Amino acid sequence: MVGKRRIAACRSVRSLSIHRTHQLISAALATLMICAAVAIAAEQPAGPEPEEEYGEFLARPAELASIPVNDIFKSIRLTAGAMSLGKKVYEKSCAACHGADLKGIPDQHTPDLTDDEWRFSGDDLASGGNVKFPSDVEWTVRYGIRSENPNARGLEADMLAFDPKYRTDDDTKEFGDKAFLTPDEIEDVVEYVLQISGRPADAARAARGDALFHDGSKGNCFDCHGVDGTGYDPIGSTNLTRPDLYLWGSDRASILESIVKGRRGFMPAFEDTLKPEEIKAVSVFVFSHARR
Ligand code: HEC
Ligand code: HEC
Image (cartoon, rainbow, N blue to C red; front, side, top):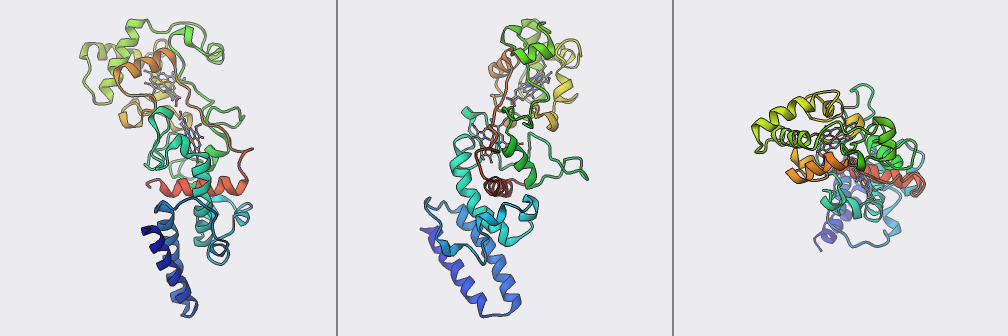
């Protein structure tokens, strides 16, 4: 109900603007954009968008197809259209795994899409990928993560199983079939991981784990997670110093299981199942919810 009343207020702003000066029109446009965002945020019952919503202030879906997603994001009208379509696409294709509130679902091992932490790098040349754009979300959505798509993210490096009997064929080909760590050494590494993430840990074991973590012929963990354990965005390795960013559980037993059995977070590629305008719209929608 609240959402409906807000939209009614938004409509009167729009009709007013038609009879006023240029300045008023752009002010109204800005308001309209906020209104569009508010309307989207105020959980509207799903249903067909009335046709009159599209056109003058809200780009029609098909218009988005040929425009680069970062250019869509520069335009009030195109963004308003993308937000409207993107919300529907999100609910249909993403919410089951990422949650209606975009905050991730522990059982689905999905990250919070509303924080300013990205598991995967951006593609911005000037900032070396540090400044993120809607095109970075588009990249993930189009190709997926460890999906069948040849351009998928996360194919470069796997969280291999340190117990060779759980190692995938691909990882066995890449890393061999040796147990680089004994079960006792794995427990040392677990204590070190707990320690760097600020939790109580056995100090003597953690000290041994520290050495194994940074030993290229043993754990070799630093190679993928960084010397300080904060992870590398280009390969999507978890920042092990932040328990809130773990996708597979950050308690002692879960960390042990991650190391013993390995982990392979999976997200499908949407290149063949969503239209280009739908991929762009949902990328704008998700990107606008992320903290920057
Ligand atoms: C070849 C690269 C590679 C190596 C070596 C590696 N990791 Fe990982 N690790 C990853 C990647 C990539 C992920 C993210 C997996 C995912 O998203 O499903 C990960 C995930 C994890 C997780 C799960 C975190 C979560 O999100 O819940 C833990 C714990 C972990 N690694 C610890 C270690 C430790 C300890 C070592 C050394 C014994 C190690 N890793 C070695 C690449 C690696
Ligand atoms: C079958 C479940 C599933 C579906 C459906 C799915 N995702 Fe994902 N998504 C995941 C998982 C799992 C990860 C984390 C993979 C990993 O790093 O281990 C992820 C990661 C992401 C990331 C990367 C976040 C970051 O921090 O870099 C984005 C962006 C994303 N998803 C957006 C979407 C959007 C948009 C849709 C809908 C078009 C979608 N996902 C549909 C499972 C899913």
